[in-house]
Length: 112
Image 1 (spheres, rainbow, N blue to C red):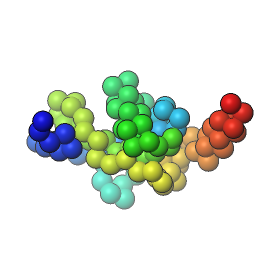
Image 2 (image 1 turned 90 degrees about the vertical axis):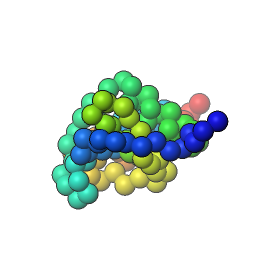
Image 3 (image 1 turned 135 degrees about the vertical axis):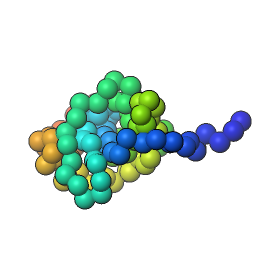
């Protein structure tokens, strides 16, 4: 069956993506160029949104920070799925109030 958990990226483009997934949807995403570097807000392509949502779902997470790296051909690989992601940098870069989004999600979830 091979090794489904490993993939080699031969030529990365020098950045990764952090997608914040909540309830099966990406609510905000950023490019990170280098550790500690300023984050830049992005609108993910539908293919990457779907990948991030599926990665969170595969881990059984309602919310998650999903780190994705693309190569020069735009092939993507999930680097990490974090079940307790930090969102301060993402919130600062995107303007999305992540705490508010989480609270609204929980309130709506409890009303079901």
